[in-house]
Image 1: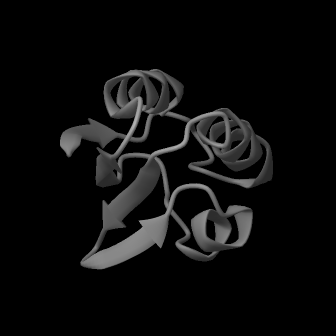
Image 2: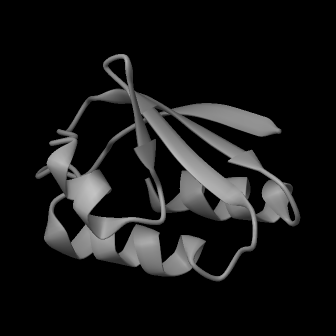
Amino acid sequence: MVSRCATVAHPQGLHMRPAQILVNAMGKYPCEVTILTEGRQINGKSILSVLSACIRQGSEIEIRCSGEEEQAALEEAAALI
């Protein structure tokens, strides 16, 4: 398992478009992708989970990837956040 903390930079947070870009990108990887925010664990491959988390600009999140190609998935997720 690998993880990295990140701050959401997008002015509108992870709304529909950036959330969809993130979920589509993570769908390419066979590993599990989890986003931790405000004490909640979110499935990083589920658009509904990401949107329902209401992640706003400036939110501190932790991205965790576990499994095959975890490092590549983590790097891409961090770049997108």
